[in-house]
Amino acid sequence: MLRHFQEYLLSLVLLLSSFHAYATTVEATGQAFIYNSDLTKAREQAISDAKQQASLQAAAYISSTQQLEDGILEIDNMRISTMGSLSNIEILEEKLIGNKLHVRIRADIDTKTTCSNGNSGNSFRKTIAVAAFPLEHPTQANLGNIRNIESSLASQLTTRLNSYDGISALNAGNLLLHKQLGTATSRQLDDGTLTTMMAYTQQLDSQFIVSGIIRDVSMNTPGTINEKNWLIDTYNKLDYKSKKHLRNFSLDLFIHDGFSGTLLEQKHYATQGRWNLAPTEKTGFATPAFLNSDYGQSINKLLDEISLDLSKSLRCLPFSARITRTQESDLWINAGKQSGLKRGDKLTVYRKTMFYNQTSQTTTELINTRLTMIVDDVQATTVKGHINGSTAQHNIQPDDIVMFW
Image (tube, rainbow, N blue to C red; front, top):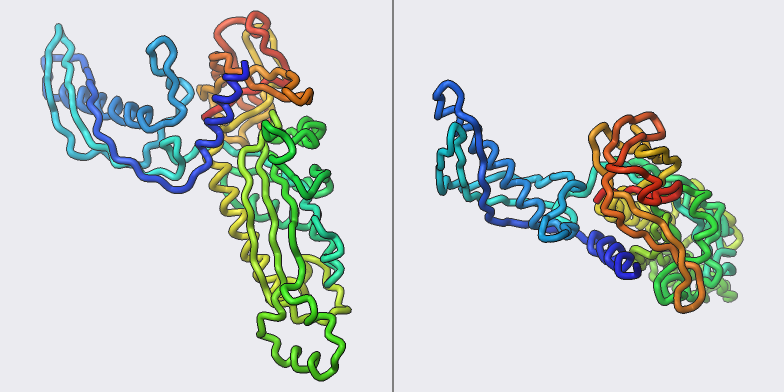
């Protein structure tokens, strides 16, 4: 069972990448019936069919999520999005078998993508909860009275993330997920699981959880603020563009899977900006006075960068939803029209199990059942679908999940 989980985690990590471009040559065969002895029309239809097969093969070839089961490539759960075009099409062979024409072609496909899995990222809307960003050194926030940064930073990111298509962000800035700030987060456990999050996963009911630690908001040259000599202090104020007025800002950001608690990505961000406000001025974080400062503007730009990075990462991650109800061969999930689902979509069913790891801590494992849920009915916030067989027979229960790569 651990092998399945390792494969799942590896696939998630591979999906977190930047821009790629692929070019590949494929061969494909198309076929069409000949009606009324119209060989020309049959040839056009056969070539068109071959082009579709070529696109399918290219997408399967470059996809890091392809799976071989008993020698058969499973592609039921792939939505083809090559974002490219066929070129250099060459007809290799035409063969007439009965009243059906078979045409084999070779073609180049230039595929420009944004994800290492070979497509542009699935189009389903991802739900994400943004938790609090606690300060590793709280006293540093006394300057400017910006202690509200711990919860307000989540609000700032949530607003930005909701401006991107494909993301539905929830402000969970009241939730403090990290207890040991100095060692958060992957360094806490061997398997990268954030145990402090697990109590909140069902409460948040989100596919992904973003959190972080604010590492530094100190002055680059602390003595500039506390200068006692009147002449030097006056000179410092006149020399307001000097580097001695720079204030640091750095944070570590984490993306965790909302169903298993697995750490998917972590990244460090840092910037600086001049803090020319009086030591006694209490602006607070993200207020107009704060944002008008050079320091506030630097942080504002950094938050734009962070939200853009998050949108790219989340687009490349698989879509997932929680099973809320099962009955015979039918099952319901906590996603609907707002997620972009439609009738006929196919999602893989994963069984959610709990086990104890080497450190006797509870860990969630997602096991691929190889079952496909086909969407039958889509409502605003729920979807009904079916599998081949009985949910009881396959031990599919509420809180298991479905996933689309």
